[in-house]
Length: 358
Ligand SMILES: Cc1ncc(COP(=O)(O)O)c(C=O)c1O
Image 1 (cartoon, rainbow, N blue to C red):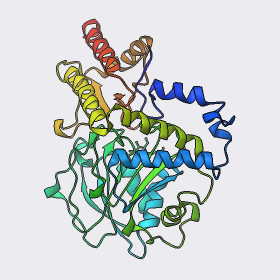
Image 2: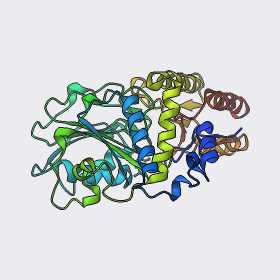
Image 3: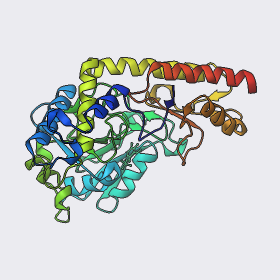
Image 4: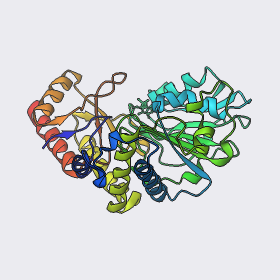
C-alpha cells in the first residue's frame, strides 16, 4: 500500500477513483465520458447541479450565498478577489500567518492599500496572532485570512471577529476537513486539488451583498457577479474537475458529513503530533494550540538526517514527505483521503528510524 503525503495535488479516496473509472467511458448510460460532454448539455447541467446541492448541504449553506465554480487557482484569486471586492474602496486588511497569506497580501498590493492587521512573521510564522493584538482598519473593504497555512503547518482554530468588515478566507488546504460556519464569512475560496479532487477547479462561495463591487478592469470570466448571475457558465467550466468534486461531496455525505470527517482528521493529527512530541529526534516549532490538523510540519533535531529520513520513508512507500521549498524539513499532509492506517505506518517508521539513527 502506497501512502501519499503530498500537499496537493494529493491522495484521493480510492472509492471515488474507482467510481470515476467505472463511469469513464459511459456516464449514466449516455455512451459519453463526462469529459466529452458540452458544458451546456442537460447531462452536465445535472452533474453540476447535484454537486452544488451536495456542497451546500455539507456546509449548511443559506440562500444568500452563491457557490461559483471557477478556474484560476487560489493564487489567481488572490488578485481576483481584490478586483471583485474593492470597488472604489482601495483599502484592505490582511492577516499574515505564513507563506500563503504573504503571497495573497503581495498580490493584493497591486490593487489596494494594505493594512497588515497582525503578523507572526517575526517569530517565523509559528502561531496565529491572538485577536486582542489585531489592528483592524474599519474602513477596509474586507479582511483576509488564510485558514490553514499549507507550508507552515499553522491553522486558525477560531473564527476572527472583524466587526463590520467582511471576513474573507483562503480555505484551500482545510476546506471540507472540518465543520465550517460559512455565515461568519463574506467569502471563502479554495482550489480543488487537496480535498475536493482534481486541479483546475477553484470554488468561490460569496455572500449576496458583496457582489457588484468589482473594479472595471475585472475580466468578465473572473467577475464573481457575472458568474453568480450566470450559474458559473460565463465560459467553459472545468467540467471533469466539477464531476470529481461532485463524487467527493457525495462520499463525504455518505461518511456522515463534516463532523464525521473532522473526528477522523483530529485523531490522525493527534497520532502524528504525539509521535513528534514524544521523541527527541523530532521537533514541531508551531505553537501547540495553532497547529494544523492537515499539514503537519516538523524537523529532525539532526538536520543532516533529513535526506536519509525521506529516502527510507520512500522505500516503505511513504511518499512526498519533503517540506515546502521555502521552509524545508518534513511535511505530512493528512487530507481527507489519508486513512488512519497511513498515519500509523508513518509513526511506526518514525519510531524505528529514531532507534536506528538516534
Ligand atoms: C493555502 C493555499 N492558498 C493558495 C494556494 C495556491 O493554489 P493554486 O496553486 O491552486 O493557485 C495553495 C497551494 O498550495 C495553498 O495551499
